Length: 202
Image (cartoon, rainbow, N blue to C red; front, side):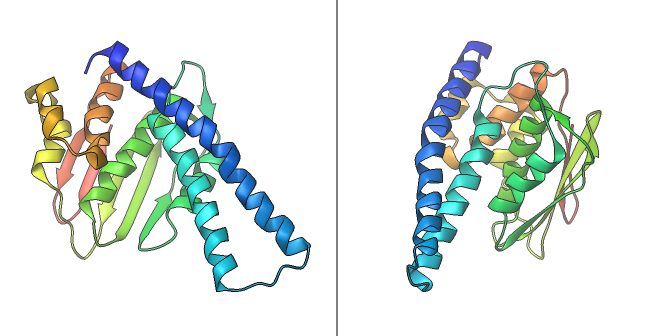
């Protein structure tokens, strides 16, 4: 994937997330106003409210993971941990152990790494992120770890992957193709360890 194509895809991702965040946020605000107006609580209202909150958190997550990051931008720890707390609330837990702000491109790499790690534990588990701006490690642990070699080869052997291989990569696994490209721009490379768990360092 060439640099212009990656940037174009990132701009498209940023545009979609930007345009959807406002209406999804409006749904959450409308539900809050209904509650203040005395609308009865119930499982239906709770379901809609939870779904709207999760959709808003995912849009914020995807905006970081798939959007365009510029030099000089950074993300504070509170913003990152807040986004992750809104997305990973059910069977998969996300333990963010990085202290302090991160450069925006490093945060983007972390989010793409989290998406990769999530695919290795399809039945749930824990994703732990440790390190700092100098280097991060994303580790997926579960009672059942199942990394798919055809996806992880993008990280373990990126030189063997070519543009034509994208035809066989499912949309849900696009992070595996995007992360090596981003790391290359940052003069970094992924180091993957699989031994009962899956660890991704860069």
